[in-house]
Length: 284
Length: 104
Image (cartoon, rainbow over all chains, first blue to last red; front, side):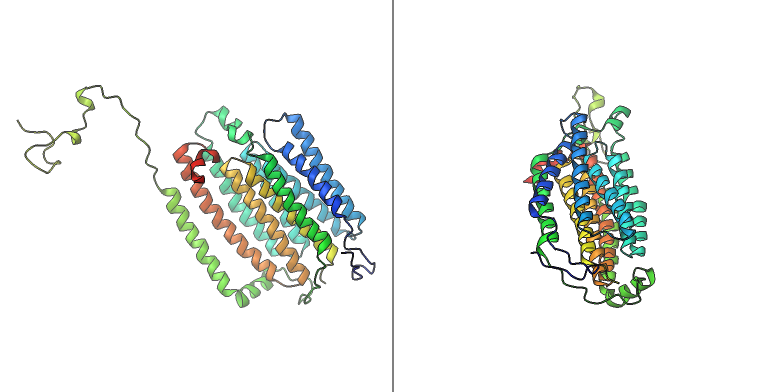
């Protein structure tokens, strides 16, 4: 558990630099903060306090990692910047009342994640992430949000429905989510002594370029690539079929007034023939 | 130059936190669209993990996997939004609770 890794920067580093009790405590506090920050029947100030608790837990976690000595070099500043933006905007995605703002905060998460990808020498993936998510997926989400909120009055479109302001089982969900998060963090920081890198990247640092990634995709991942193409085509067809289908609106029930105009001609029994279209009304 | 283990741990921690946040959002929110935004947040966490592990091992497998993940996410978004439009036409609300009888 406390294996020493002499590989890091020449200095031995205890693997369990963050004690599990601390991880547990931080997860509990962050869980309470998340319960408070989720939309519910809380006051706005209570939600602000919850957000402050979350922010404090994040800062403490960052400080622990910094004290651990894991961050050296100028790139770490960018790591913390992007990580903070990604995580805090992700919290806002799930805690904002209005779905449009949720979508825009998700855009912020995507851009920060793209920054993390750049730090990991995956430039092409960063570009693809911004193009696909920001350019296509978030735009589609915003379109659907606007379509779906159009029906009400203007006030309702800006207010959002009740279902946006009241969470469903926030305490149980936060317990489950933060149990999962705590377990994963415990495993990451305490349990596993990682296997070393199996091989060094060929070609130095330029491993994330489109050329190298394309070569890799089209040499060793050809079948998967074709399957992805088929899945995308099927999804497009399926989306058109699903969304284009007309919904059979339940006809508004009309009160029969007994007036002759209320009588549907197709409902009048036809005598003398089986063909209803040629003889609508019975002959005398 | 492969990155060292503490650096890998930071990225894995970010991925885990993003995934958990998305999970909580998926369980608590009631707006159908926000539900699927939460799944996209979970996708982001998984993608960070993949890229970090690929960088750690100095291979391109992680990035190739994220490309397929993006394809699946795009397909999922298209289908989910089509379904949401269809569901909205039927009930004129985005509340997931209005489809409670689908629980069975």
